[in-house]
Length: 262
Image (tube, rainbow, N blue to C red; front, side):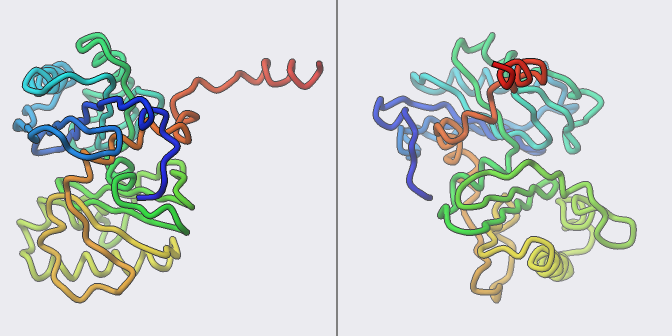
């Protein structure tokens, strides 16, 4: 990871980090420098994964862990300032416009920051130099992009078509792995690596998520598989000062115009 300007590092703040996945909800306590200082706890994701059931699951995990001052959450979908816009693998019809940050703050009484789960994974593994791309292989495929350590606007690449009318989730997600088998799935992963090299022109591509362990050796030198634990440990980076703008309410157009007329 690149150097941090996180104010929590100086203050020694502890972060409760959640990773919401299609198969499991996971949590752990992170030190101010991102080390896991508790056991990692998890529970099966409720089916159906409705907001009230998931929130209850997260609260149950929090009760198993020690003291913390703040919370970070990696969520499998599009998040804007704590509110869910899409949740393809949990059910967008359940989650759309749900203020998850507020719900967790109400339950646990601590400030919350939420990012897409691939973004959190990326924050846990990037070096902070050049164009770095992160994809996660799990229930679906997550995607995040960074330039010199700064998170780019989220692109829900998993919902974009790649081949035969299938989107990325359908092409390399958990269901596809079970259907086509390990060998064909690995060929599909390599096709995605090639596509992203052309589209993104990354300096480094990181592949995480629970199924990254199934990727066969022989990837290009600038493509690395990384621990799925980064989906939790990257959570401390969400509290870096350089991330503040992602969680602040933007000024209205009227306020900007008024400022310019002063």
